[in-house]
Image 1 (cartoon, rainbow, N blue to C red):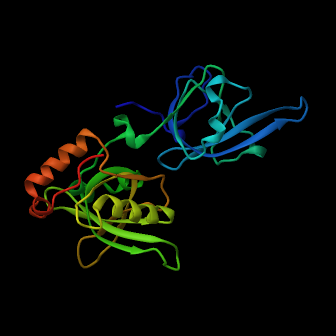
Image 2: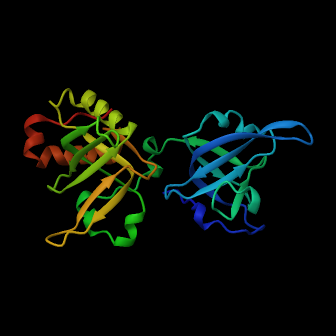
Image 3: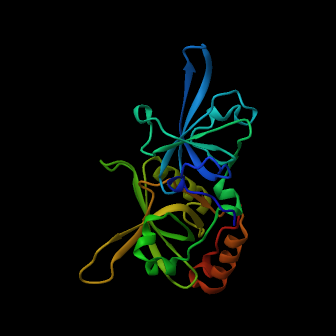
Length: 263
C-alpha cells in the first residue's frame, strides 16, 4: 500500500521535500504577473480524502504540469514539492501553508477506482463496530445492491437510497445525492438488465453517518454528501471477483438469479 501525507499534517520545514500527496484538483484558476506581464501561471486548490484543502502554485511553464489546468476534478499524485507559509492577505484556503511546485515536482493523474493501491476495503459487518472517531474518515466497501428507492424529483434535489449486503447476510443503507444519484440509477439499470440480475457495487470514499436511537441500535448508513466519493459497478478487481464467488456460493437469491460478471 502506497503511503501518502495528509494536507492537514503539512509543516514548514525547509529540510523536508519528500512530501507525497494523493489529492483532488478541486479548483484551478490562472494568474498573471503584472510587473513582467508574464503568464498565465496557475493556482491549484487541492483537496484530500478528508476534505482538507490547500493551495499549490506554479510559477513556470513546467513540463510535468502542461495540460494539467484542464483536469479540474481529477485525482492526482504529487511529490517533491516545497512548502511555504501562506500570505495572510491572499489565502484562498484556511491552511496556514501553501505548496510551491518546481521543475522537480512530479505529478500524475490517477484513477483511484482503477488502481489497487488506493483501496482499503471495510467489510459491511465491520462498519457498525468501528470506533466513533473513525467515522470522520471515508471508507471503501462493496456489496450486492438491493431495495433501491429513487427520489430524483425531490424538492431538496435528486436522491437515491439503496442497501448493499455481503455474503454473510449483513446489510447497510446507502444514500447518494445530486447528479451522482442520477448517474447511479442509470448505471445500475444498465448493469442489472432492468433488475433481472444482481449487481455488485464498489463504494469509494463514502462517509459513515450515525444517528442515535434510544430504543434500539444506533442507525448507521453511508452517504455521498460532503465527501469526495465515487462508485463503480462490478469493477475488474481481484477482491471483487473473490467477493462475487463467495456470494455465488452462499447467497440463495444470487444462486437462483445470478450476479453480473465483472467488467
